[in-house]
Length: 620
Ligand code: AMP
Image (tube, rainbow, N blue to C red; front, top):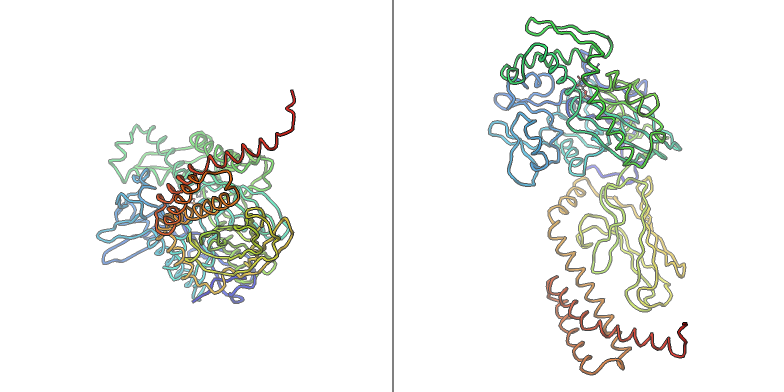
């Protein structure tokens, strides 16, 4: 079982190991590697020179599964058995996608729950993870065929906006396809890497990655500094792309031919013919000024300027997203150092022009925009394989890191999936008067109670000078360096005493263990929230009990004996609740004690004020 490397720079991977880069796309997928001789990234191509594998899965007779071009041919003839755009369903529940349910011509199960969607093909149900794994299996076997060597390790790219569930689903799909997924990389990050951005250690740059594919549009603003890519903002439209350009052309031509949409939808083959010719026209107009073709014996023409006229509104929408992305990142156009073009539709000259005009600079478009993400994934894979030692490796923490606070609660300082290096700090204080030391217990995991997480280290900060509870300020800081080593420091700010410890956070955790810990956190989420609320109520109760006892001890003269008796009995009932009460019972106990003791505190305050005023003249 592979361990998750702690030290990613000197990780457990062997030299020269083949790790492929995979762009698992909505429409097309492809694989790239670093060429062993040229050391340059290249996409893997079959003899016919085709690198793109359509991300389409077809289920035929007797469970025969085909992927790619062969499967795409069934899109029109067997829509219920042919799955496309499965990436749109990754990590999603039906309620997430119901707005777009009409988009899918296959059966997405509406079970009215928030659990992950399933797709029904005949009598069999598939998860998006399984469906993606079919695509990945196909990519793996094609790569093995071309490279003539087993391929077991991969870097897979995902959109920058993918959340944890979607990233985890992608990882799982890889695992199911027999791939060890070494890293999930953001697509815009990969695209920038393909252009060599971010490979210099001291480089600091702000990059806009404009990605217009067949069906989706994304704009991401990234900052690279010292080898770390940070996504500052993302924007886009998950239902806008080159297919919409094709639709505009079809609408224009069918309008000229006097056909309306209803008639067209009745003649599926005719509609398909129009669509295919429209795409051909669009592609050809990227490098010529006129296009002529025929559908059902009729001739149709289109000029570049008419085409631009048809799609300018769609392009303008993408530019509005760019404005929004800049605004969200708190940047202006001038702050963008580089603009990278990704996706087949960025070949449209109008798109290039408008993007370049908007950002006021030349865009990067020398690499094939369909391949650029896979090429970048290969660059990242090469770094992970240990072949590019000059490059600082980027990683994220797989599980949250935190310390134990009162009541055995986990206080997270560095949440899971934080980029490394990463730094976080928080101040704590003592619970008891004169407390001279503080125990710092470091944990890793997603559960609310530390006992359910994994203890990494523990140390005592000693030598805290005697002070009343709550007065010392203990600054606890976590630093995970680029090698994945966590250093925990604790410093009492008033006295300056400090102590630190080094921990290797992921050491010895297998992929399966990490996965189990994450799964547990999901399974126990509800229970954890309940327990956390109870522990918090218990902690609050203990604090008010201690404070009230202290108050009575010091200020007995202020209270009548009846008040003291009442308070004591109220404290006893709260103490009893502490052991066996529910969160609500404890809270109402706290409330009662608070109500009872509030006038005492006011009385003490009045007395202090009147003491302070004695003998002093109030200025007139
Ligand atoms: P992608 O999803 O990145 O593979 O992009 C696919 C989209 O790019 C489809 O809508 C294609 O029609 C479009 N496309 C591919 N080549 C060209 C081209 N030369 N000019 C315009 N659009 C293109």
